[in-house]
Length: 339
Image (cartoon, rainbow, N blue to C red; front, side, top):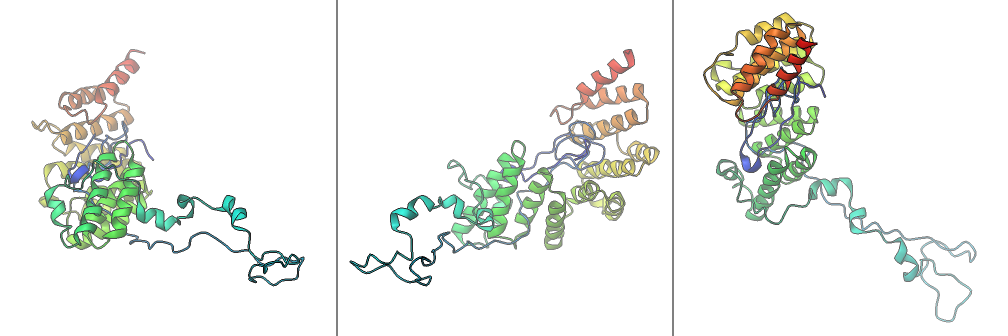
């Protein structure tokens, strides 16, 4: 995946954490060309995606063998009668089959494994889930809602360290509750974090159709970018209801737009896009650091190292959450200037 893209994932227990800033993708946590961060930052609570539940396989993985050719006995004939030594068993003896038995894990089909999902730590009860998200699970039977909640909580806790496992947890939740937008969103978030951009795009679009929310518009645009379709990314940005977006989400959308411009080789347009954003905002939120970082990164590409150094320092100054690696990038630029 491009350096400037950072994936996201379902929030632990429904909470969201946005990491660093980047040139053009909603931050799942890192800024544009630094820790992959021109991706949108996560927003929205644990949510899963499509590929509805897959039924368990009824096969037990055991196969019977046919008759023995030496006796001429047809396949399927039962065992020899007592005292009849001229015929072989048409089936292997029980003790002969023992070594051929497969462990239960090996018998599970791929769809069954996806349905079961990874093991859920015992300490996760499901009650850790954010109340607003838990409320959306009330349409499910109690036991089913609890199982889905536990998978969503596990996904949120693993999204940063083990995005692939988090993604598998959301698939298990989706297998049980694919008609809930909150679950589809969780799958989209985790898929984005795991680098499954086509799946993330499909799931987040599905969730948007179901609930009309705009929380993931920046990630949707960034997925288009990750799939090598900057024109579609720009179309998503253009059609977004910018007047209704919160400052943090609007900043992420701007970062993605600038990234798409860079993908198209339009560096000057990318710089203008970022210069029209509130780079000098007095807020000390993570989105300000990401926005400044994205601008500094674009300046590096434009071969304006002195300006880039200034903006990396400005990004670091407001980056209390360490959403970016602005300090490291500043040191890198300083060394290049001294060389």
